[in-house]
Image (cartoon, rainbow, N blue to C red; front, side, top):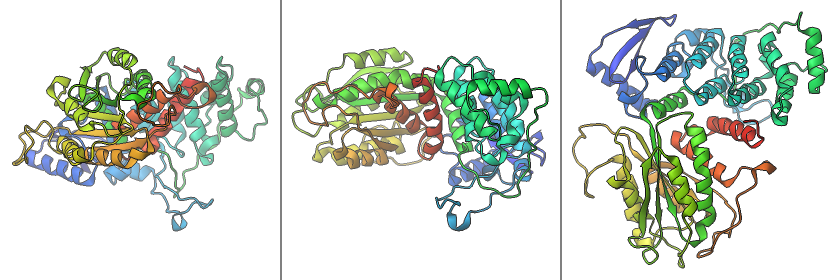
Length: 511
C-alpha cells in the first residue's frame, strides 16, 4: 500500500489492487513527500500546480496513470509491478545487433488497460497521441481498443498516430494485438484518399501480419473480404523478462499536465540585424506551427516578441514589439513586417533584449510556465557577457526578484522559474548560446537555416527548405525546438517521435 500525494495535501492511498481510499494527512507529511519527490527529480515544478484528481479531465488522466501503475519505475511495487515483470538487462549493455540498449518494462494487461482508460479521459488530441505512443513496443492486446478508437475518430491526426503506433509495436506481440477490429480499420484505411496515409496503413498491416501474402491495398481488401468471418488474432503470451524501448515516461505526461493546467508563456527574443532575415522569416512561419502543436497541449498559450540589435542600430538596443498575448496572429504579423537591418560589426546587445523581455511591460504571469527563446547568430559584447549570464541565472533562480543585488532569505512563495533557451543560427556562437541556456536553466540547439551563411549586414537570404521534398521547413524546425524546449531536458527522444509523426503526415497532406 502506498500513499499518493498531489498538490499540497494528501489525496489518497492505493491498495495493492489500485483502489482509491481517501486519507487525511498533516501538512508536514505532505511537504516531506514533496521534498522527496523534488530530490528524486520527479517534481521539477511547483507542487500546488500539479494535476489533482478533483481539478480537470487532465487530472483524471494523471491519476489514472499514477494509480493504475503504468509507470512502475516511479511508484514502486503496485499493480503494474505485478502485471509487468521487470526488464532483463542486456548482456554488457548491448542488444543482439551490438547497439546500446535502453530496456523498459513491458506492459501487461492491467497496465495496458490503464492506458486505454487514460486515453478516454484525455481532453485533447495531443494528450491522446502521447498516451497512445506510451504503449511502446510490447503491450497487451487490450490496448488495441485504443488504436481502434483513434482510427475511427474524425480527427485525422489521431488516425496517423494509431497507424504509427502499430508500426512501432514489436514483432513479439504484433500478431497478438492485431485484433479483428484493428485489422478491419487498417484495411479500411488502405482506401484513404491521401497516398501517404494509405501507404502507411498498408505497411502497418504487413508489419502486424507478415505471414499474409497481400502487399498492395487492393490485395489486403480482397484478403480481408475472404478471411473476415473466421479471422482471429494470435494468442498473446506474457514474457517473464524482456527489454523494450520508446515509451513515453510518466514525467513527460506529468509535465504535459502542468503545461495544460498552468499555461505557457513564450517570448521570442530575436536578433534583427541584417544577417538574420532568414531566421526572422522562419520564426514568422513557426508561429502557426507552434500554435498547431502546443495548442493541443494547453489552450493557455501566450506568445510575445522582442527584437534587439547593437546600440548604434536601435535606440536602447532592444524593443518590445508584442507583449504576451493569446492572439498569436499579432506576433506572426509583426514578424512579417520586421526587416533585418544594421549589424555591421559582429557582437550584439543580447543582454538588452533579455532585459526588455523580462520587464513587467511584457505581461508575465507569476502562476504560469515562462520561457524566453533567444534566436541569434552573433555573440554579446565581451564586456557584457558575464552580466548577461548573471541576468538569466538570476531570473531562473530568483524569478521576479527586485534589484540586482544578492537575494537573501526564504521566498514567501515558490514560483516557477524563468527558463531561457537559445537557438543559434551560426556555428560560431554555438558555445556562447549554450552557456546562456545553461545559466538560464534551459537548453540550446544549433540550426542551419541556410541563407547568406551567417554573414553580417546582409539582406534577405534564401527561402526555407521545401517541405514537399521531404524536409522540414525552417519554421517547422523552430516549432519543433519550441516544443522540445517547452517540455524541458530529458524528453527529446520521446517528443521527437511525436513531432516526426505530426510533421510527416502534415507535410504529406494527410491532415
